Image (cartoon, rainbow, N blue to C red):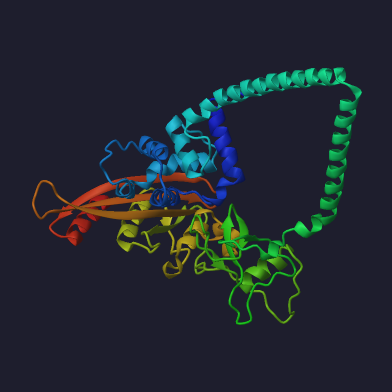
Length: 422
C-alpha cells in the first residue's frame, strides 16, 4: 500500500487540478483565486472547510463576517497558490495544500482526513478477510448439507434433482427472452432532459457558428494559449464570461492554421490587422519599454494610480509606452489575455511593441477613524506584476497597502495616493 504524506498529498492535488480542476479555476491569478474563494463561501461552506480557510488566511476572530474579512484582504496572499498551480512551486505548510484542495474540491481533505484513509484501507482489508472466513463457513455448511442429502433415500434425491432442473430451465428461458428484448430498453439520449446543457464544442467542418440573423451560436475563451469553444457565453460554475465567435477568429484560426477544412469565398479578405492592439508605436532596442495597465474591480483604468505607478517604473529604468490596448477596449477577458501574453488572441507578437507588461489592480476601502470623530480612513491596496513579453516570466511583483485620512472620502483618497507617490 502506498505511503501517504504531505508530498503525496500535494502531488495528488496537482494531478487532480491538471485533470479536472482547471475547469473550475482555468487561469489562476491572485485576483481570480480571491473571487473563487468568495464565490464558494457565498454558495456553501461546511465546518471542515471553514477551518481550512481560516487556518490558511490566519483569521482567528470567529465573530467576524468571513466574506467581508476576505474582501478586505490583499490579493497578494493568494500569490503562493497561483505559483503552486502554474509554476510547479510547492507550498510550505499543510494549510496551503488544504486550501488548494478546497478550491478545486479535492477529496479526501483536509490532510488529516487524507492520512486517515490508510487506516480505512486496513479496515477494508480486515473486512474482506472477515467476509472470506464467513464464506468459508457457509461453504462448509453447504457441504455438510450435501452429505446429509446423500444419506437420504433415493426418492428424495430424485425430487431435489428434479426441482433444481426445473429452476434451471426457467432461468434459461427467462434469460433468453430478456436478451432478445434488450433493444427495447435502450435510452434515447437526445430525449434526456437536463437542467444544464452547457458543454464544450470541438468545431468541425459542419459546425454552425451563426444563426440566420448572424447571432453567434459559439463562444470561445483562451486557456493556456489555446482556444476553447462552448455553446454558451458563460461557465455555469466559474461564471467566466466567454467571447462570441467572430468571422476573424474562424478565418485566422481555422483556415490559416488548418484546424478544420472550411470553404471560404475567395472574395472574402482575411483581416491580418492585430486585434485590439494600438499599433501606432514599435518596440525600440535597449529601451526597456513597458506598457502599464492598473485597473479597478470593473477592469477600468485608474488614471490617478496609473500615474504614480508610471513614476515608480521610470525610476526603475523603464521607458513607458502608450497603452498597448486602448483603455476603452479593456474588460476581464482582455486583461486575462494580456496576462497570458496570448499572441493568438491579439493576432500579433506583443514583443514587437513592448518589452514588458505591467498589469495590476487597485482597491479602496473606507472606514471611520477610531481616533478622531468624523475622520475618514482610506486604505489603498495596490498589486501589480511586470511580465517579460520575450520569456513570459514574471520579473517583478509589487504589493502594498497605504492609508490616508481626511474629513471626506475624496480627501482621504487623495492623501493615500499622495503617500503612494512619495
